[in-house]
Length: 424
Image (cartoon, helix red, strand yellow):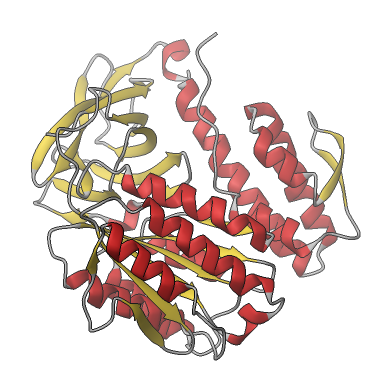
């Protein structure tokens, strides 16, 4: 059985008539050591081989090298495959509508096939994901993960077609997405990664592909669980208003729950290795009188319907204003991180629309929030888009010249957060 712990951080006290309870739930996996046996896994590399991957020519060469590095990381016994993506999807290894089982022979064979990849054609990412789903279906009972690399826009499908594919793939496999260069759309890869519980990032230079692929594959090979759900029970007349992963990245799960019964909903969290994640829950409860208390929610980690760990969210009504107005430092921190991500998105949109006043205000607010929370990574990314006069007040000036890759890096990494620091 997988090892999980769940810790709840909140202010339990509400004023008389108060009805909103907020809490941060920190979930840690693997605290008890390595699992006795890792679950069977399946891995597919989906690589854009459209014509644009030849410009510059070193791009497709770097992709072939990155594929080889990733294949070397696939451990023995893992089912794996390689898809070349253009305006249609093509299984280039092993072929025949099945997956190979990793060993020294199949890894070498796959790398030889990858060396022959050439770039030509268009881009239709939905067809790539559809084929990946079909291949994963030939390896039932495995933890399924894909890596998708592209350098361009999804020109040969409508957004509606891609959305339909994502709806069909959701819950069947996870997918980490990477865009190389500056000619792809961050919003497209974000949609894919969000729907398939993966990550999204930019590889500014093709020479960075191999290291990124190695990192993603090592993380995938380190997964120690099947799909795990965050199960939320609420009492009668209470309801869940928000379920959001807030660390290491922000991902809203509120509308992705599956109703188990009248009071229980399961929210997907995907697979886990040795890691820790934080979730923000907001529960609306019936208002009560001073002195009363109740269990507002019970949060459990569930794998194959087995409860792995549990935390309790409580509500106590008080007339002590000092108690009821105190905001949990964990809730305050992650509320600020969510606002930081939103300010970056709105600032970049305003900048593209030519609304300099709004862009300056929103990106300035983002600078202040990043500075206050110690999110140095995001602050460095913001410095590529604005000149910072005073981080404490968020006084900034928009830069006249901004490299596309810098703006895309800020956009794609805007949802990365920093963990709340230790209590003073």
